[in-house]
Length: 61
Image 1 (tube, helix red, strand yellow):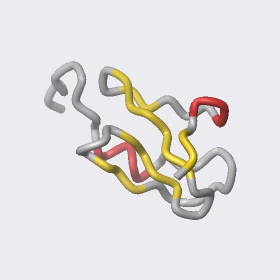
Image 2 (cartoon, rainbow, N blue to C red; image 1 turned 90 degrees about the vertical axis):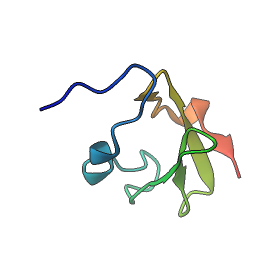
Image 3 (tube, rainbow, N blue to C red; image 1 turned 90 degrees about the horizontal axis):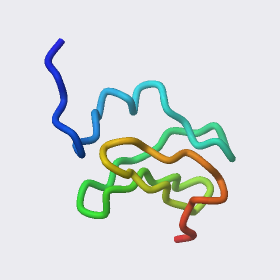
Image 4 (cartoon, rainbow, N blue to C red; image 1 turned 135 degrees about the vertical axis):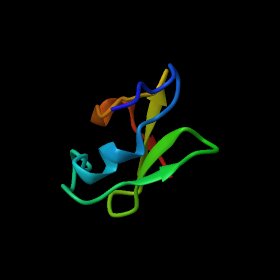
């Protein structure tokens, strides 16, 4: 397994991560560095390559 550079999101995590509010799949927005939950209408930030999956940190869309 190759090492991922700091600040880069590992898209393989999309296979296991779900929205903590709806338990639905997330969509990676590379430009905004966010994981979007279309079902909940929110986006979770990715900071230094690590998704912040806290409801209170989500941005409403």
